[in-house]
Length: 270
Image 1 (cartoon, rainbow, N blue to C red):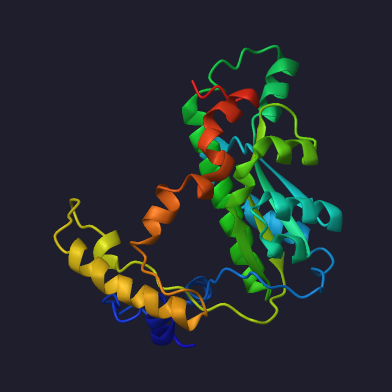
Image 2 (cartoon, one colour; image 1 turned 45 degrees about the vertical axis):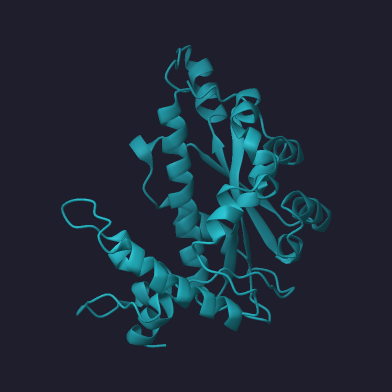
């Protein structure tokens, strides 16, 4: 697809006004799709290490680098992960699953080795900074993977049971998997590019405004519903999804108790 077609796929008929042509990197970004069907073909030799190098090249708050990544290829473990992630079959099928962990155990060990009281380490601010680092790291990995012809999908449902994930991966206290990522070569059926919110809702100039939000969301609901039907999914609007995601205890699963769980795992979030 050319740049105009990619914009149309990403926004439907709510195209932003832009006279700037897409660079090759932008075109790759615009083609992002969540890939949930994989062939059995493994990643090329050395690809994982190259992808991690791309991830580590992302920004990191104060250069503290509080992220560890655990790569999982064992079929039995991937099957257990699939069951823990609400039964999502692609978790078991993907050649490799990357588990992105916020790892405050490493700085804690460094502090102990140096005899320093790192009293600020448990602060909520550092947890948020580490979670941000993990997202930046992972997005660099995924973009690099897409540039190699691979596809991927984030796995937020690993937060359903963080203590199970910690046991499976032998994580120490003060380390928690925030999310996972499936990686591999895409198999049929392929997913389409999912439309995003119009920029009139997302992009604000000088101050926050909701002047056009109601009309823009109505238009987006129609675009979103049309896309879902084209992908063979039930017809639903984007705004209707809010009830399923934010008012559904079954969907939240164990995540409703996440603060208490994190406390047991060494994150007081003070």
